[in-house]
Image (cartoon, rainbow, N blue to C red; front, side, top):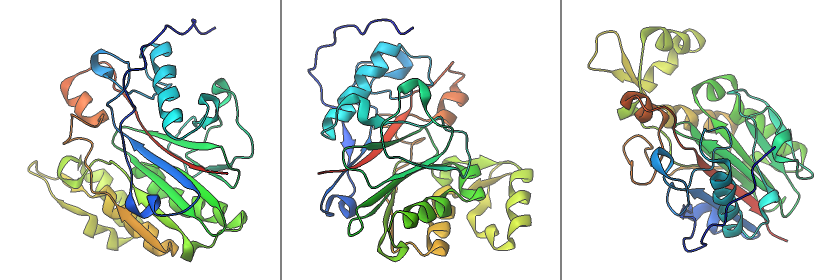
Length: 270
């Protein structure tokens, strides 16, 4: 059973970055939330939205309430997934309880007032919209999800609701950049075996037999291959910008016990 929420002073606003390409679309609200404007302390400071983190549960609920409020939603309508680095997508028609999150890495809806939320801490947060069909989507795209087809799966799920891929706008929020993403030879070999052209997403690292992987570039290539009408990479690196973003890899390099999660969310307005 969850402990009762503590009383928090509502003196700060959840800080978020908006993409011009999505902000210009009618009937849609969205946000790539930073780590600023919340109530969490320590390594989670301060807008940690990770329900799977070891942060104080009451603080996480308050942080998510602030995020929902910025989107004009009640807290219970900001829906998260139990993310498992898969290509699986759920179609959302009604909110689910916080303790009943489906296992998936993408979600789509055409129902107004539902907030589709993705949590990340280096992986790519993707928000999709076809404003003409009034269909939106969100995806958690780490290398496993991108490699196994999460981009394409979201596009197909949106099409099932009436969207057209050529009308879609998709935006990639804060993600680890190639300058911070070192991988080993087995990682490179897996990509090259699937498609030799994937070699263009790797550059030599300082360590022998290692490479730097361009996850944003790989995601962009999957978007192009899927026929998404417009794709924008905000070009924000989670690892390099500690003031604004959490980073799993940065926390690991420092030997920290856990890390906060960023939230990206999108909703249709009535």
